[in-house]
Length: 465
Image (cartoon, rainbow, N blue to C red; front, side, top):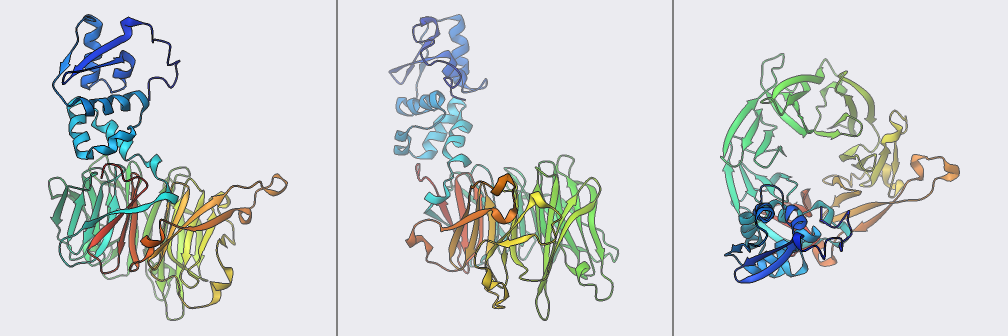
């Protein structure tokens, strides 16, 4: 927090006992003890402030670059990097910030998710991948790093996007991947048994976990999700006659905690044959959403369930018989489930505040397309980030935002919610092959396209590059 947020900025202007002078590379700087303490107790700034308490007449000398020091001092004063920081390479700023012990403050300011402005995104850089394999999965971290699965390989780009490493795995193709922290990934495949916990720094497998199904035939991973403390994995037996969702404790060496949604397939009972292919945790509701679909001879069928982990029961289930989802996501901040219909290609919303409603969905786009049977939604992807919903159609990205309006007679109805569609970025950035994957990290959006061996980075601000 900047030092003047909760106090009068003039309150210690004339208190000379509070003013600290620092000589950096022959250039004197003056600041206050309060400003220096914003750097944290383990920083060089804090050490200077503490030493000033004992010897206020001493002027410390630091043999470093004074220009970059002025940028870091401005960061301590305001909580933000000044505009002149864009004149320096971000790597140089971080290198100097590490010397002073404030590199995390620089990262937070440069890649803060609060700087993500969806209406101002521009394609800023392309990240090349080695080999000829197309991208099958991506995952991101809060500080803007990204991991990309292509073929049997995972290529990791750090927060600066300038350092990358590639790791070979046992899988022929990686279908599911989730970032657990700055160095650990959970990965799985639909044609290779087991879930692996991979250390991307050391490039080794830390843990193999599996589901021992009744037939002892091995189990493939269909989807991965997580909360702060738990890891959720959807398994299907290699014989495809049973499936379940396993829950593991992230903080206790991924030991199994419980199992939900265990189904053994009997006869032609189609519902039990559909494993969950998407898992999302809802912290505000303490519920886990699982969703899966199946393409039958006449139509696409699916189901969406919300699980209470304490009881192990589904508290809400939506059966998808008409215009089943091609892709689906859920937003805690918008209190809604969003899907793109496989037939219509339109975006739909189900309000979470009305869990249990019989007719949950209402169309945000053209409702007339629901029964056209053309399957315009095949290949479309949908994700929520912040207070926006992003939906890909071909090579374009639609951005859906809610318009806040007063409810009629003070009574809220889900159908009264209004969302508006915009196209994201600049017109020249739209052109390209069909978008296959996208994700969000820091103030960036990462996009991959069909048959392309690179990752597009879309960013609200391109300073530092």
